Image 1 (cartoon, rainbow, N blue to C red):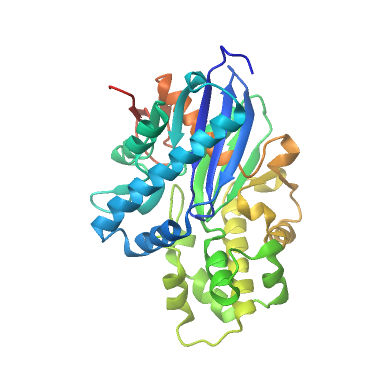
Image 2 (cartoon, rainbow, N blue to C red):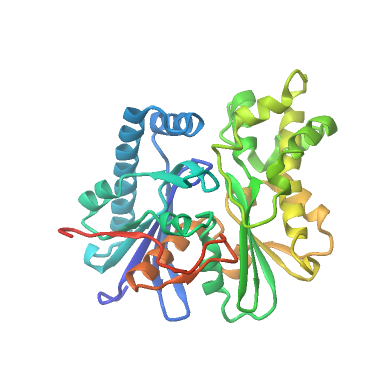
Length: 371
């Protein structure tokens, strides 16, 4: 690596809460290069507290404050470890982009808000590197959903492509990007891995349904699926966004009511729900059938889920972003590195077709040493 090169680091701990993704990226005028990336595990106790804070909507202010500081420390440790592994100087890092851990996301409330924790001041203090954070606020203040923001990065990645295409993220929540020439649309489809992961852990003490083997053993319960899919969110028009604070085990339990269903059938039905909400979202886009779909996020590794999506869209070519040379596990963290770069460069965006906000906006707050 050339000593004069300036890099950006992107940090992402998503709705799956399966780790902290860190990416060290170099950006050119119309290009990028991922130099190093790694996923760091989140302390089990902190992970447990974060999940409870999301369900409780951060009602325990002391726990919220402590968890935010601890997560910020974990972010900083992950960043410092990545820099050491990459064997570069911190002076070569222009800025760190941090998504933060979403605890509550209510862009349609009055007043609207979205809360992310993961103390940027701790990251600044422990790394000594400029931090860009709180990317959603300006968009929500301008009437937008505040999410998803990655479609902007996708537009940068595919600016030379003229044929329409989809990018599908299957993380804890699933979201979709549609790019056609210079236009871009993006929105959250609904649950991704989060419900599947929860019940794989509850019934089988697994962090997730490995390769979708549990879902493959089970059968879809039609009545249960019908109850789940009747939720109004699935039938809203975009722009729209959601999170784990809405789609969680309490939401599932409400729809299960007094039904008695085999555990693998529950997981199979939740997998079908994820596949259905993704496919119906794709079909909302005009002329969807002529476009390739590129998958990224943890759900790419769930073979059963991907197989069901493919079977429901036989007319479409569906591949991992790895076929494009983009690691599907680090698309989001690379995206936040790019968003940090754009903020440092004072770039503004029109997100009206993605989040519904109005006007040209800067995304992110900058925190510097002695600022």
